[in-house]
Amino acid sequence: MSGLQQPPSSSTYRATYQAARRHRDEQDVLIERLRACVALIAEQDPHDDRRAVWSRQVARLAEHIADEAARAELLRSLRDLVLRCTADERYVALAQIAGQLPDAERQSALDTLLVEARAEADPYDRALALVTVIHVLDAGEACNAVFGEVLAAIREVPPHDFPMVCIGQAKNIIYRLKRGTRTDARRELERAARAIADRQARREALVQLGR
Image (tube, rainbow, N blue to C red; front, side, top):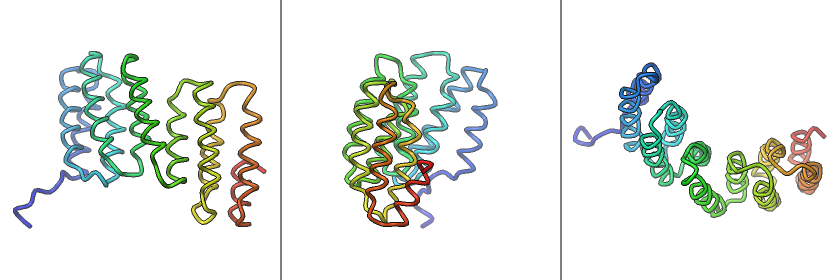
């Protein structure tokens, strides 16, 4: 085992990330430390949630990079790492990254994110992934279209897979929908909740909706 290289520890990453935070007003140091963070993230197992969680943290701190080209390059590196990640947090990280890319690249990144979310075979995972995407789409028509897909996925979630979690998350993004459609969206969520066959799961779903 001694000959096998171990991935960097959380403490190594934290020290590097904190150094970047402390020097966020010193552009050269900030960029250097964030690039070091990206290198550490790349060594993490794709199944490890830390790969996605750390990527989200680095993306958020990258907002302080004044040089747009340098910022975009770092965000692209993070996006490529997270796209190869299978951890639960990957969509939150991808949404964070996509939302910060330059306008010319943002739509393409969002399209890729939607493709990834729609490809989730498990309806529970698909519903939560699509909800995450809605958070970074332009509010209005695009959000309404994806919200319809969220509802469809929720209706596929078996009662023992906690559909009330998806319903609660979906409720939180209704404000992103077009005005005039939000009341209908709430009604559709309530209809999906009342259609859950399991009594306990149905009750908990309605509690999520304040019913």
